[in-house]
Image (cartoon, rainbow, N blue to C red; front, side, top):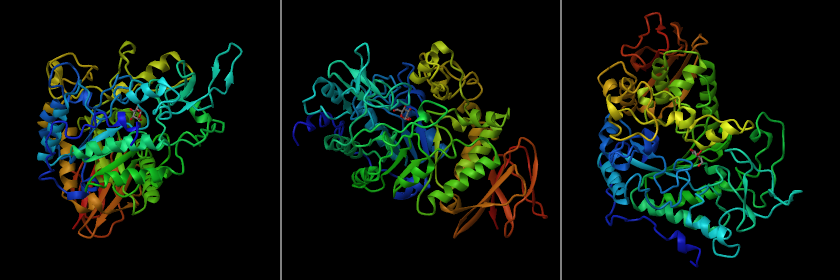
Length: 567
Ligand code: GLC
């Protein structure tokens, strides 16, 4: 299809190791695994390092698949594994079709898919399709000439004018999420290009059919290699207004909030693009996708949710630890998504403060493990697919990173730019502590990022042998959920509890009726949940969950969450 295809067809990884991908064997839930199962996000750099260079790798993940099946997860989502200069720690991709040598070879990836499938675990890739690295061959070609086949693959514009010193002025007021203008002047082309993130992450022009075609070819390549699904990075930003109009200016607390982002994301024709993407993915059965909603509200997530395509909204993740805030978030999401749309539930990821720290701090609670155990009950018993972030099952907390060790680029910018506020995302990306001793079973080398200070005691080995640990609690709750129709797929209805610190909800399926009751207070609470029939505790945050008395009163301990089944 003309010269536009030359680079895109370059190294489409399909069949890199020359054999057909193994089918998923002994997996639970058939093609509906994405609704019924549990998805575990791996940040590959930090999970397990087989070759001892201090950075996690694919072989390391293969080594730990047994841990993941024991935990009871159905799929792993890998943060980007593609070649990258690493400026946005892998989200600046220079070739979407192959594996970064730091993680291994293409054959290692094929082996990972085969080994995961053999154990009934699906593999989900993170697709960063909104932008590329400035080192990507497409961008190199695009910036080389205003005439060539790739000239229009990125968003290029002339300056809006020149300042008194003869410097070019940006074409409009669009901003970068990582600080400053979204426009960068390119001396070679004598034009500006657009970037929502780093200067080194130029934005693709999805309105060019060649871009869409090349991206979809790449998607097909990964499907052919046996990939079971995709997480789409900042997907609602793919399309901009066709005329790249300036955003209206409004009142707001931050530079970003001082604009109504009408034209730089969330375009009305975007659902059709997702439809076209889904039809590629649906060429093979049982393949899912989940879109990362960029800087938008749950209402938008609803509009972009379709069959086998979920969307991360942030209503639950943004809630502080209180019965009120959680009740509001659960109610809002139930109301907006309704019965027809499936929810993606998440409390932590590689961009946010880890929830053991975040939630405990929001309620000024010292015992982060107690909060982590109760939050696990919420995550694993509300309606929707739970996404776990590696290490949350250990109650991992944010790690304080000294200023001279900061890697996260916007965090470095914030050090120097008083107009730009940012948190340090390195704090939630520290290496997985598998055991005690040097390298904590993660590496034999020097880890790319420091371990948590408590890694000698807070690790997989230690928590596996402690039935009361956060890890053992996750294991029990996951086992319960996987065997329980109501928890996996039942309806959700909030219940009255008579206590402002206690939140409760019913989960009901034709075969089962469950009731979940959570005490958000760091103190005991008695509660009586209005419910028909008698209920017995089958699990929860504590090893010996509270049982309702004959008077129907449930005496909950501090931060106790109980899962009950109707007789
Ligand atoms: C997404 C990723 C984040 C990255 C950004 C730009 O939000 O989750 O880590 O920095 O996109 O690619």
